[in-house]
Image (tube, rainbow, N blue to C red; front, side):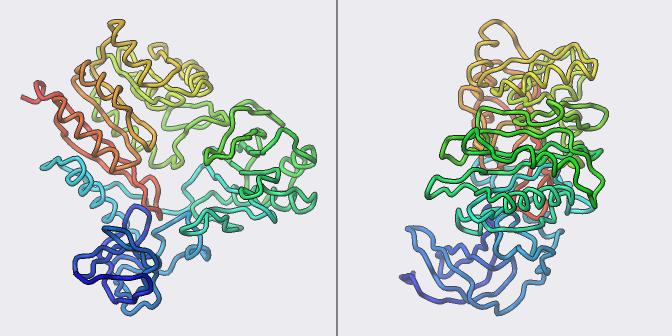
Length: 457
């Protein structure tokens, strides 16, 4: 094998895209992750970093364009890290994500002969997000990270966001410039505003959250006035404005304290026939069209008859719980975020659901406790964060031995890891359904149905 060194230039074909959006190429068996190309390109690259088993390279010349390459609709695509796949046609994006799911299950989970259903895509893979989360830096720079860095790359419009979200962010930017309010500098630890978060419902009701380093927010009355009284080109209504205080120098966006500056405590959005209260820290899926498809798939896999006990672990504000409750005997939701559980209880009430109970705490603490108290589940649904399920949660599920486990995941690699544990514990993976919840990015949502081996015989 050739011995490479930093600065070497080589020509290769990009044969894949990794989860970070980098092209993947091989030269004499050595893997290179490539910045600046897409699937199917032939490129000349320069190596900028070398590890034991792979290298990183920058594209310096595009020699042959991929047949799948398209012109990005966003002018910031080549520098902004918000999207990774805009230069790849949408059909190929879907194929890429489906292959990613298959490969992870096979290579990481060591699970074969599993039907991975055709990924469910979108008719319009733009303007789909109901939540914008923007970073704020010095000189009023507002945007996302620059590709491959933790530097803020300023943008004025994002084409996967609702246009109203872009307009609101621009209003905040103008306000900051007018009153000389500094964004937060992660190096000097100085500045006031760290993040801007905008949530928008299906009927264009908006919650704005300004994340600050300290409790003091100068000219906040002026900001409120600008946001609620500005003549708008988009038909939306500001229903709620919050200030969130985050004093910690970590990558976590929201701090523990919220101060309501204006309007209602919560906004209300819908998924299918169900209404949901949403608080500043609530987890709510960002793509309303695909979320309804996703949850209906969970309901289909559950195939409830009316006498089942269901556990919904990592339940958030009770979205999946309520979809299941109308057809189950009892649903028990578990979530670590206290405000989310408060919302879940309200959501059950406004939807006239009386057979859903919610518990605050870590899944790895609450679920084993409920099991020890004699509470068993016929079906368990898990929708964990990107890091996946804690092993104690997986262990309790295996010990509880529900007939079905339905695993919702936004991280196919970690899903595959957890599926391997459940298969070892006596479960069979029946079917995997990818859903393109995040078009133009490398992310994909997956619903997996598992049944206990005894049931499958």
